[in-house]
Amino acid sequence: GISNSCRYDACLGSIQMNRRTFFTSCVGAFVTAGVAHSQEPSILNFFKKRKDQPRDSVIEGMTVDKVYPRIKSEAFANGPAAGTGPLKHLVADLYVIYAFEERNLFMTLTDEDVARFELTEEELHNVALENFRKRIPEIQLQRYGDFYVVQTGHNYEASMLVDHKFWRQEAEAFDGPLVAGVPHRDYLMFCDSANKNALDGLFDFSQEIFAEVVDNHALSPNLIEWTSEGWRAFDYSQK
Image (tube, rainbow, N blue to C red; front, side, top):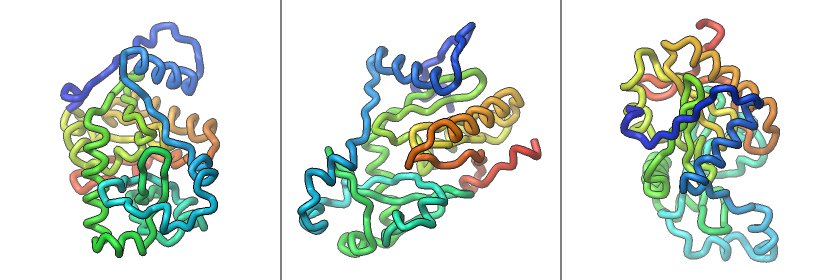
């Protein structure tokens, strides 16, 4: 459970600031403690450097061990940016895509890439998950009031949703079902739904972040619930 993860408990006390400002300060606390919070290389810089090169030449030599899972919104899944690559429905309005990532390269996989690897979509997902676990071997959990905030670095916070082993372990420590919010690629929080204060705080935080952080990495204002079968939608209005 939570006791087996690396935690950084913040003393909220009389801190007077909005939630997003506090969250940003928490990231700084991790850096001060020696936990680097890396940033994903800019895709804009990637295209500036490679705009004249064919896609095939850019990915030449890229191997399946450089493929990682990324979480995307329903708006992305239904839009042109989704392209022709594999798209896995995760839960509710959240989807999983797969991308080559190395240094300043970030490129979403196409069906042709998957065919080149001679993998089924299920095999691709399993390989991407193992790559992810190797890249993020230790997860930081920060307590924020009555709920927990996940920190991974490399902008992989939302991608933690695909690691069912992690969620099974964390859920064991709670009295009620584990409920999570993922309003943005960089924001993943969860709590024990048996704790009403935690659940209310989680819902409010998710709503606020989704409304405030308006960019291409926004995900969902809705909460999801962990079950023995995996994730499912959670109806906060019924609690």
